[in-house]
Structure formats: C-alpha cells, structure tokens
Image (cartoon, rainbow over all chains, first blue to last red; front, side, top):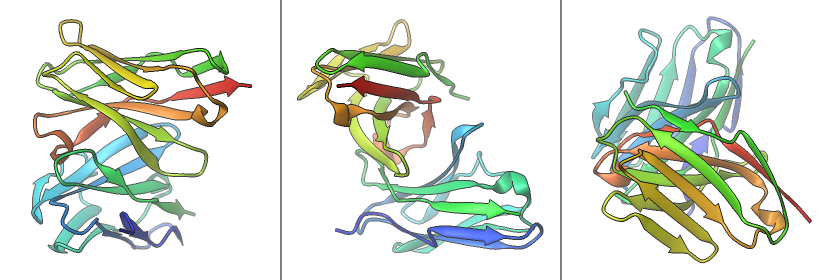
Amino acid sequence: NAGVIQTPRHKVTGKGQEATLWCEPISGHSAVFWYRQTIVQGLEFLTYFRNQAPIDDSGMPKERFSAQMPNQSHSTLKIQSTQPQDSAVYLCASSLGGEQFFGPGTRLTVL
Amino acid sequence: GEKVEQHESTLSVREGDSAVINCTYTDTASSYFPWYKQEAGKSLHFVIDIRSNVDRKQSQRLIVLLDKKAKRFSLHITATQPEDSAIYFCAAGGATGGNNKLTFGQGTVLSVIP
C-alpha cells in the first residue's frame, strides 16, 4: 500500500498561469478530500468526493478553482489564472470511513 | 460553519512529563474528533480519534478526552519522548467520521526537551 499519492510534489507557476494537481487515493477508499495549508490560514478544507460524486465544495474559492474525480483512482484540482495568494501546500486525503489518510502534498508557488 | 480553536500555540515539556493540548469547537453537530501529527517538512499523520458516543479513549501513551457539554476535547501525551516533538492538530467532523470534511485547529508546536 503506497498510501495517497500526489503529483507533482512541487510546482512553480507564473501569475496568471494554470496549475493542475493530481491525487491518487488509497485503493478502495470511497472518500477523497482536498485541503490546503498555509502559515497564515492554517489547514483549510476545499472540497470532497464520495464514491466519485462531488459532495461539498464550500471551501473552494469561486471561479478559478475546480476539482474533478473522473474515476475511483484519481482526482484533480485545477487552478486557473493562478495568483500569488494561491501559494500553499495542497493536501489530498482519502478515507474508508475511519481516519483520513493524507498524501505528502503538492507545494504550489505562484511567482 | 464549524470553528475549532486550539488553545496552546506552543507547548514545551521535559522528557517523561505529560503534555496536554486543548481544543474547543462550536458546532453541536460535530461528532468525530481526530488528532494529527505533523513533523517538519512532512504531511499529516493520524494519531488518535474519538467519537461522541464515548468520553475517553486511550491508545498506548495517548489519551483523548471529550466533554460534549463544554464542546471541548483534549489530547494527553503521557511519558513524553523527544520523538513526540512535532505540530499537533485537532479537528472536528460530522457523523460519518472520516467520510466527512474536517475543520482543523491552528496547531500546537510541541517541544519535548531531553
């Protein structure tokens, strides 16, 4: 069991560019979550899926952020027109109903 | 929405002593309370959780207490060791446990002095 896999581990984009982050949940886990972590805001919930269906995206900044889960083996978080304030570590987690298992994160830096 | 406050931003204890981290939450509907540990440069690692149907849970040197009336829960680490040094996050979630979103506290930096 490789755990939750996130790629890339680091991404640097210029302001206004697009960034796509990938997450492969633990096989068989039914829920997939996206969070982001910054020094100032701490850990913030973004969105989650259960059995691939979007359940709650109340934490997603409007307009520029979107997430998909096209199949049970991966989810993507897309940020359009990236801004410096989007710089953060984006964490993906998966769960089978017990604890959430977190991936290593993708550190996004927007210059 | 739910808000979780973690009362100690930093905590320093001597090796072998106990460490206690306290959290409060606002939403009475929250019923799942996990704790995570984050070591420098690493991701979150689950340590222990408690559900609202009990008020105490222990796993080896870790004890979690839950006071639903006060909307307060705490992590007790007994016989601390240097490897316990890390950032600890408390969180609150809904009735479906890990199948629901978590709201995190701001984290407590625990330093265990040898």
